[in-house]
Amino acid sequence: MRWEDFRSSDNIEDRRGEGGGMGFPGGGAGGLGIGTIVILCIIGWATGINPAILIGGYSQITGGGGGMQREQRVDPETQARRRQAPTDQSGKFAAAILGNTEDVWKEVLPNQTGKQYTPTTMVLYQGGTRSGCGDARAAMGPFYCPIDKKVYLDTTFFKEMQTKFGVKGDFAYAYVVAHEVGHHVQDVLGILGKVQGRQQAASSRTEANQLSVRVELMADCLAGVWAKSSNDRWNSLDQSDIQEALNAASAIGDDKLQEKSQGYAVPDSFTHGSSEQRMRWFMTGYKSGQTRSCDTFRAARG
Image (cartoon, rainbow, N blue to C red; front, side, top):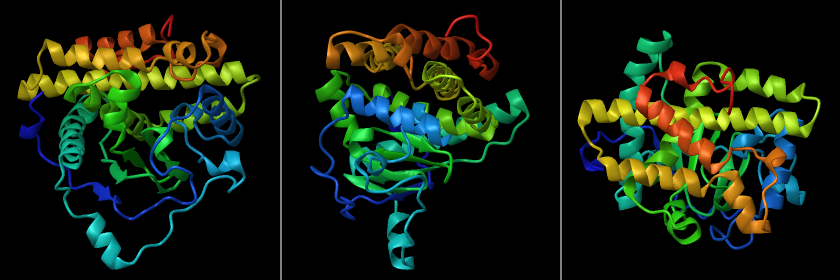
């Protein structure tokens, strides 16, 4: 993937080096077990925050805080430093991929949906930080907060994809960023708010989980639309890049994660979709290049 040719986004907020431990044990290392993930999903369902994107904060589980929290105010000097362009490789990569998603969606979204695209901001951090949706922790993985309209990414996640999931390659990492930007696209289209309302009215956790799966699979599909549109314009991909994305989608399917953590899968508890579903919906978006092909809510099967 020739990401070095992409324009770097100015919508980067670099909080790395600020500490940001917030009392979390172990800083930025470690990972969530499936039990913790399920708890996060239950909290999201109960509070109306989309559980599929794992927001609401670790402190809600440990008793360190409840509900959504506002970001702490920062002084002008800190704000200016956060807005400086990253100089390290992972920061440059994240800024370039975000910039490319902006260039794609500012054309694709109005052309295909009639909606103007307002870019998201990506917050880079290490260990932990505060988001509009609560405390962000490295172990939660990347997520999108619809409250402050920002994507949160601990850049050590790229390395964890190799060590924890056996996934590597620039485009595998780009797929993760594009997936989170896909949630922002859903937000711009007004989809996230509607789904959260349906989740609050759901009669069971299983029903709420099924809605979460549809949201996540749609974000996978939108990542595919981005990849197709970007490649058509910049010719930046080859077949090995697509395979990297499929490897990533497969590795983080709910069935594989559950089988790895507890030895078996429980489909009713899925919140992101199976490996097969995630790969299939990414390819649906990539093959069509059309946002309308990503309507997972009307699709006969997820």
